[in-house]
Image 1 (spheres, rainbow, N blue to C red):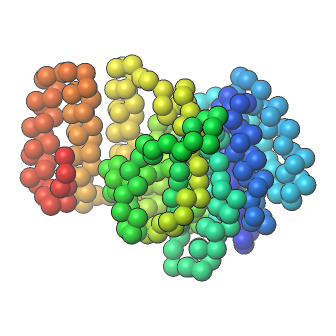
Image 2: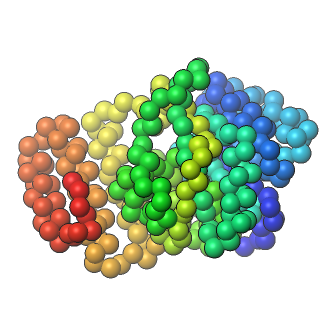
Image 3: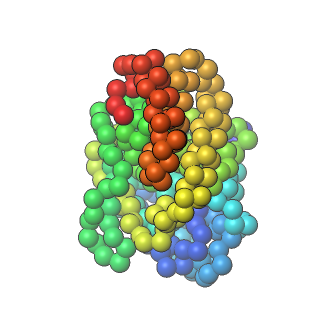
Length: 304
C-alpha cells in the first residue's frame, strides 16, 4: 500500500449523466477554503455531455491549485464507479460526495481540522441540509438524524436510525484501505455507502459535528428517488441482503447475537415488502419469524 500524502484530501465524485447538475458539485469543491485537494471524477459511462462539462472545469481546478483527474468507465453502478477512483487516492483524508449535491465552503477545512485536533478518531461526519433542485428552498430530510451524541453507529446505520448521507463523512484513507487493501469495495447495484461506511464503522467510532456542512439535492428522477416496480423493489432488497452478508464477512461478524440482529434486519424488510404488496402468506410467515427473533434479541432490538 502506497504512502498517503499528509494534509491532502481526496475527493471521489462518481457521476452518470450529470451534465445538468455536475457543475454545482464542482463549483462547491472550487469554493473550498482548504488548501490541498485532489478531485477524482469518475464518469460512469455517461451518454449525455457530462464529460464535456467535466473537461470544462480542468483549467479552473488548475488555477485553484487542486489536482483534477477524470476517469472514464463503462456504465455499471455507483460502487463500480467508486472502485474506478479508489486506486488514484493519495490523500490523507477521503470523501466521496454525490455529483448533484454541494459542499459548504468550509466543509473540508472544518472536518480536517477536527481530525487533526482529535487523532484518536479515524473519521468524522457533519450534519446535512436538504434543498430542492433549481431553488434554495430547504426541505425536510428523508433520513433520520438519530442521536448525534453516539459515536458507535454501525448498527444505527444498518438499522436506519441515522443517516448515510455520503458527503457528510470524512475518513482517514490509510485506515480505510486497511479494510480494503485491494482498493475495491463490493460491487452491487445498491448501497455503495453501506460498502464505504459499515466496515469502517464496525471498527471505529465516528463523532458528529453539529454543523450542516453538506447540502443534499432533492431531485426528481434521481437514482435514489426513482419509483420502482414490485419486481425491481424485491430485487433491490435481495441485493441488500447479499451485500450485508458480504459486509458481515469483511467485518468477521460471527457471534450469535449479531447474526440474529442481521437476520432480524433482513426479515423486517421482507415483512415490509409483503405488507406493501399485500402478500398475506409472506406477512404471516415473516411476522412469526420476527416475533421469535425479537424474543431472542431483547433488549438489543427494542423497536419494530
